[in-house]
Length: 110
Image (cartoon, rainbow, N blue to C red; front, side, top):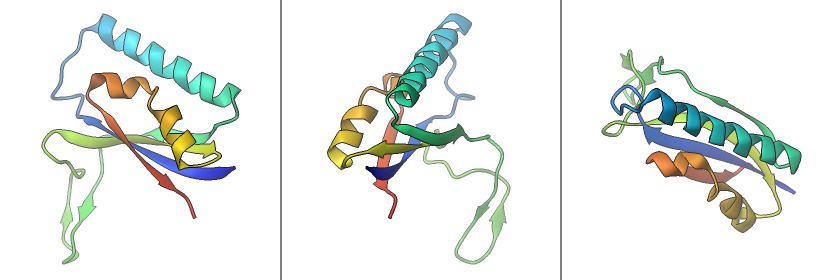
């Protein structure tokens, strides 16, 4: 089995409003999805990321915010065990984050 880092990029929740019911449903789907990854032995770690941070540019200057492209941010990551990149891709295609405008970048850890 190989290790993969999955970066989840998604709209900044502060700029994209959802109802409490919609948020609860989405969070329940994500929780169930993660539990299935654990049950299948694919999930080895991961966390959500805070909206607080700093960016250091090539000149060493620091900005007191996180890196964004438009309203898109890196919202979290998981560490995934999979036989290969194709299998990892198929697993990630089922992630509920994709249903709300997010996308995932899959990279093998070497």
